[in-house]
Length: 213
Image (cartoon, rainbow, N blue to C red; front, side, top):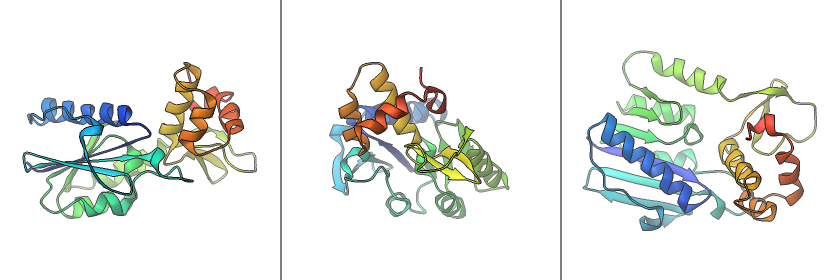
């Protein structure tokens, strides 16, 4: 089986953790043994994307988000799609931030199954379940707060007057949690997310919105 495994995070350590989740999934669910790989061992490709081929069958693609100045976007759909070929039988992504409707449609059209680790679901080309899962993933983005005007909180977007999770919501939440636990300072968090320090202060006060502990 040929696999494309994709991960995206702000630090090498978090990318490594995501890759380990993917490797564990391959071993436990697909009966494929992959030697553990650290993000720093991956070969630089371009645009802060890293690539590694394993055993000629498995391609690991990772993107370090904090290396994109003035943006909080992860790998673009084009970056992911250009690494996905008809030879890949399975696309394994660590979180839904890496998926768009176009990516899902393209993969399923070329008979590539998609496994989404943070939702524990796998989409297959046959049947119409893929569209249902897409709708569910979109529903899962809805937050329990309405937008009251102005710029939406960091990591969030607005749809029909409702706050929803943006593409970087999970990374923002993880960064805010690191601040609360004393792992990093607010200044370091602001640099990581390319925002003002006051934005971090404001966000840490909205624990319900970001499900902070």
